[in-house]
Amino acid sequence: MLSCAAVPAPQSILDSIDRRFDVTIEELTDLARIPSVSAAGFDPVEVERSAERVAELFSDVGLHGVEILRIDGAHPYVTAEWLDAGPDAPTALIYAHHDVQPPGRLEHWQTPAFEPTRRADGRLYGRGVVDDKAGILLHVAALRAWLDTKGFLPINVKLIVEGEEEIGSDHLAEFLRTHRERFDADVLILSDTANLDTGLPSLTTSLRGIVAVDVTVRALDHPIHSGMWGGPVPDAATALSMLLARLVDDSGEIAVPGLLDDVPVLSAAQRAALDVLPFDEAVFRRDAGMPHGSRFVGDGRYSVYERIWYRPSLAITALEAMPLATAANQLIAEAKARVGVRLAPGQDADRVARLLVEFLASDPPHGLTVELEATTAVPGWRTTPEGPAFDAARRALAAGFGRESVEIGCGGSIPFVGPFSSVLGGIPALLLGLEDPPCNAHGENESLDLDDFRKASRSSAHLLAELSC
Image (tube, rainbow, N blue to C red; front, side, top):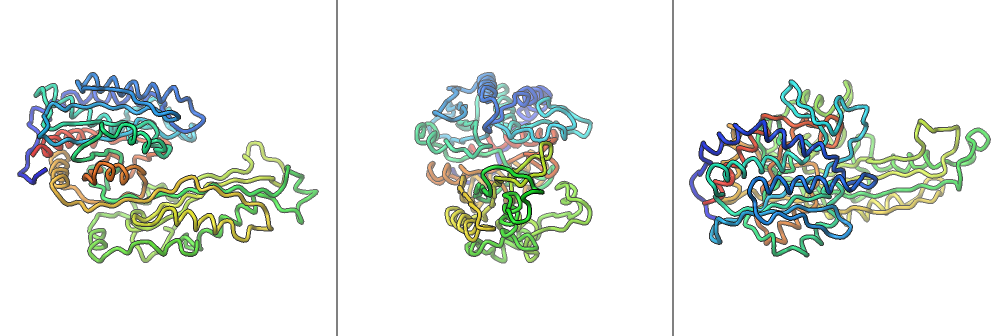
């Protein structure tokens, strides 16, 4: 792929996207009605239905070789391609995922999670509408516009839509080994990241990694009366709370010895690049849902963006003992938690997992039994956004959104990006997304800004053209 002058999509392509935009929203709404939750305990038939609907969309667009592919024990993948641009044309591999997070607390949804609702604020609300079903439909809209209007695409395109991204992509490595020959490409396009702000197109150049450790504290072989036994007899919930409290200091900074030792130090130029990004503290607090009077946590020597993108953080992502609704005056026999650490790009995930397990295992409160299992250890990823593919992405984003893009990090984790890019020979990875600060992905009332959805679809159409030279 050589550098070349700007090659935007023809106006007829953009007009086609705009004319059909309400239909595209309906297609997204239809797909998001399917409760394709990949987590254990939810009906896997719904993930199958979602895969079938994605395959129908690809076939309707006019893509070739549409298949639903399965690996034992995994939710289905959907693949498709259009390779008629010829062997000398560049090939882009587009990735998205069709599985979604559980809906969470149903009573906190203003409208039902799986009945997507378009509201007067210009947003579509529903589980999966932005993470990541819009990431599928924005490319469907662009591909359809090219094929309907011109009858061809300016480059070769391959698509893979995964069905288990939200549960860690555990089978992706096996899937790639099994179907490696299908995915040779010159550039990877991933639409599962965020924009720094609504209307501000952003190119994500780094991802944090993730480590998860499950903790079980056992104090008794059965619950007992808290009045008759409380005092000399320990209970698991209190002990677990004591153990978890050791993980951070009073500022909220990680207190596990050695865990921060391999955090890469940003250069002065990298920090300067962060400093020029727009940041409104009041808006940030509002979008996060922070109550009045609460303070930021972590080391105040680092900016908010650096703490989110380039420093590790720790959270207790699950906590189990006794639900309030069924609580009795008891000493708890067993309590469980999941400790999640987001890693700075460049940290050793296996090392962090080992340090965390060793720390939690040492000196258990009251000498109780502590069982530990590291369930996830995935490193972060970082790229240098230089070269023709990144230049093409910047031009496409600027043309689609009507303003220049910015380069950002992402505090979240997409485990397969690094290995996927490596397996494909280190091809450039373009991470372009639709999430924005108010979208509440993974939370209740997830939403998609529809104006950004239109702009992202136009950017996708431009990107196909820009990558052609």
